[in-house]
Length: 336
Ligand code: SF4
Image (cartoon, rainbow, N blue to C red):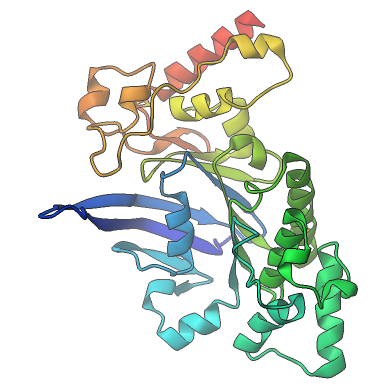
């Protein structure tokens, strides 16, 4: 099967200039030579701590910002080579759900206008009764109803606002949705409802998702595959069951250890992540993860590991990943 979205060697840096008099300008490499694909109907989770470059990747996919190098190919079209008019037309197929349901909806617009706006932008607007029916149907699809059309965003709870954000993305019948931390601003009790809704509409409309999250627990049940990012690079990518069942990278292992489990024996084997994320302005030499990695050896400080296949369909960037992951899992099994 051909991928719907293919990212090749994508990189993006930002220039930061100190505001102090005579302050220097430095380069921050937010996304560093990443490649991955997403197949039609698939959900790929993109996970990592704040500042790892996952949201920048989402923006690059939609070309909300321009890449320095590399390519994003969507549905056989290279997004970076499209003219402004072509890009505007293609955005109908590429939509985004934002993290913050409070600031992503215009507070001065009624829900009716919020949902009709993308239809107008793409020349899909209808008049009168047909539009009313379409907007009502959209709201019903996301668990709201027609009586909500004339309300303003502030009249809704956080979960309901995110449902409106989802309805807005759905309005133009996209093929791919980039969901940038769509539940992290919501109460835990609401997160599951919104994720269930996203799964339902994925089946109903045949959607493909790039699902960005900082927490492996949030995406466990929605993703087919998971890509883990650290300081702008992908350090592991594999089918979800391999990430959660037999990770090949110490960073993923640490992220998994931070996921609360109702199993006290598992708790004792935790190896919580040590230290802060290093500055992407001046990342560590060799393997960027080495200052925090409990398994680091000399080679890790000088040589950057390639992302390579450790098992079928399971890629990781670690000099020793096989050995370390299996040893760690053996420890866990023994203690259980
Ligand atoms: Fe740890 Fe070395 Fe593997 Fe990096 S390459 S994750 S520092 S063991």
